[in-house]
Image (tube, rainbow, N blue to C red; front, side, top):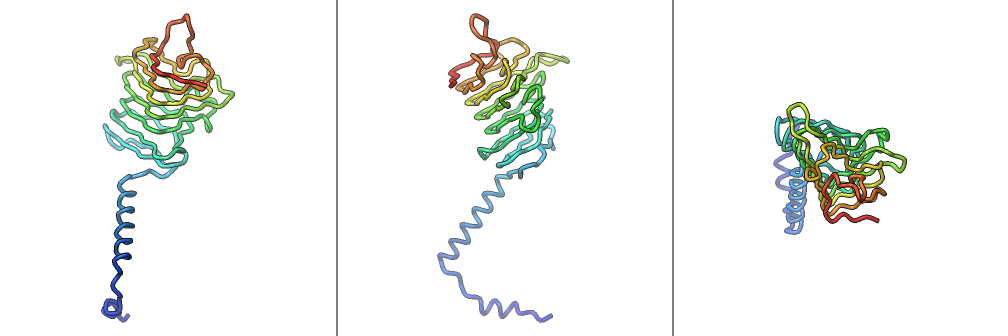
Length: 210
C-alpha cells in the first residue's frame, strides 16, 4: 500500500494562531473533564480500597450501596445526582451534593442507615420521601458489637416528607447528631420528630421550614 505521509506533510497548511489557540483550549477542557473522573450514571459505587475510596457522580440515577471502609467521599456534581434506594454506611464518610430518594424503593425503612461506630457528614444533600411514606429518612445506629454509637452531621441539607421521625437517632444522645442550617419540609416540628415539652433527640441549629 503506498504511503502518502510525506506528501500530506508537504501539503499540510500551517494552522492560524486562532486555530492553534482553539485546539489548545479544547485539549485543556478534555484534560480537565478527564481529571474529574466522573462516574457515568448507573455506575456501581464499589469499594476498591480498604480506606479512602472516592466517587465523583454526574447527573442521573445511581444504584444503592453498602460501604464498610473509612474516610470514603461521595461527591455529586449535578443537581440531579440521585440515589433512589436504601443505602448503608458503616464507616466514616463524607457525602456532598447527593439527593437520596425512595423512588425505586418506596417501602425502604429509611433512605440511609448509618452503622455503629461510623461518623458521617452530609453537606448540601437532599433527602426526599414520597408523600405516602411513613418511614424514617435517616437511621443513626446506637452502639453495638463493641462499637460506639454512630454520629452524624447534616449541614445545609433539605428533608422532604417522610414519617413522624425524620432522623432516627437510636442512641437518644442529642449531641451525637447535629443538623446545622437545614431545611425541614417534612411537616414535623423538629427533624427528630419530637416537639416541646419533650427533650430533643438531635441538636438542631438554624433549621428553617415552610
